[in-house]
Length: 100
Image (tube, rainbow, N blue to C red):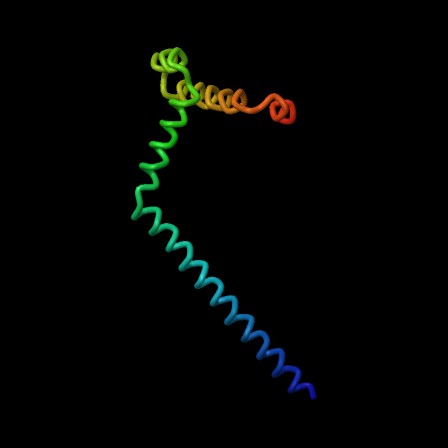
């Protein structure tokens, strides 16, 4: 009786091990697929363009002129602030209160 229990346990362990290996293999293939898609497409270019368009929408001309005189670190900090402020001000008053 003990040997059949050991045999069943061994089969379950083997099956679990095979399932784990298959899961890891599928995850590796999925991860590689995502990386390949990212490299093959123009996602970085698209993200840069979208960020620029968003910045143009939320940052006024006078704020842009002020940022032109700043260094890169200060400019990135202020552009983040200006865009967050612009997003906040685009909300309805009720939603602003919820966030506040």
